[in-house]
Image (cartoon, rainbow, N blue to C red; front, side, top):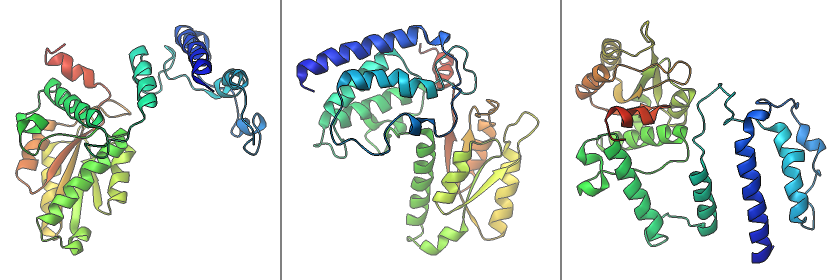
Length: 280
């Protein structure tokens, strides 16, 4: 595909995308295919020669669409939407064209600095303290992760690493580290504990499905009495199943009385925080 062919194919695809989004309500939300359906529609081995764009384009409807669950359909209510939009589609096109890997500043100064600025924007929209910002001149700042699950895992690893560093990097302490979360937390929280090789306590929630401070406090006391080291608390704000909120004020007060770190997980309604702060 040369530049002219790309222009033609891209225009065709843009029209297809716009038509798909405008008419998505007319499609069945759930597919009627059975597992393994694609094997019957495409070759078992990769072709030695490429196909024409016209053939590939036809495969979108022939192969892909029959197996699509349409997350952006107005009739889809299983989960929260995946935050797609026309501007984000344009951004994906530009990102794919630039195709940078921002692992250092010099690898792509624009990529690195734009991410830093966007993280500061987000922190300000959520009214976080100044020390959370890159622009604070301290150790603040953040990194955009690929998924919410990845972000939870990275937060746990960061807390684990800092805890070990403050204890002379004694790796034997790994078996004593213990983290806490609500029993309403997303499964990725428990998975983060497994991957991080630390104990993860899933504490019982109250009748409103919230984790309360007294429950957390009592469990920490028991664990300390048994020689364990509390180091990490996951506060859930908007659970996937019920959109329940842990009692953040109480949990935060307990955290301030222990040696550890707190992470906030799963926020399907982030925009409501911005709206409630009167920023938009």
